[in-house]
Length: 216
Image 1 (cartoon, rainbow, N blue to C red):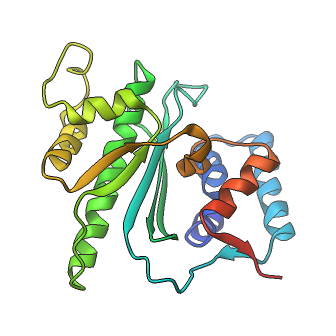
Image 2 (cartoon, rainbow, N blue to C red; image 1 turned 90 degrees about the vertical axis):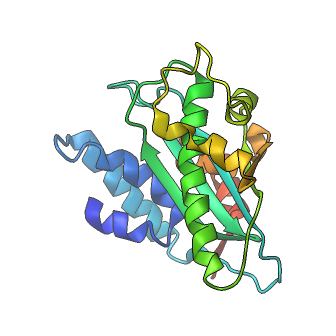
Image 3 (cartoon, rainbow, N blue to C red; image 1 turned 180 degrees about the vertical axis):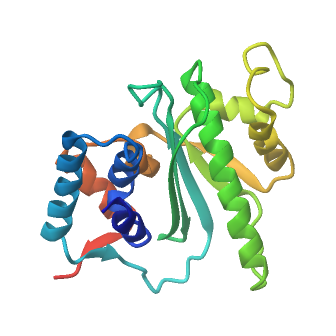
């Protein structure tokens, strides 16, 4: 069942977080996990015509949102990175992935998440270059000012020297003006959809904001 749901997340970003969360327990599933999977299927049955809408407007600028929870996993206290990328107002890519290390601060988890999102942005930039479209200083929206400042500061200090080297390539991308980091309020952080659960009102606000519509 998880495999089928993972396949479905390619066109249903609204279930991305729930499915990825359930997938973590495939090695030792419990009845409670099965009940959660059944709830996902009931949600899909209740929203069979909820789909992504791609408008015809000419806005084709690339932008990205990235966010992370802090120690969201109760078992090992690792965090979850989430991100989404848009061409204009069209959602073209989204991610939800558990981080491989335990972080010591919210700034660190946001910095790691931003680095992962940056890699996805660079991939989209390279793909679009094949069509003669060149994106420079792609705006990337983060809701943590400390993570933004770390990304802009090429100097390593005591509070960041333990972070793995592979995550620091985002500094090089900022220096080369491939991306540009901007602060966004938590209320307008669209990547929240891929890292945590919400009440019904907030959930439907986010899926509407990323471009999902009910085609009844």
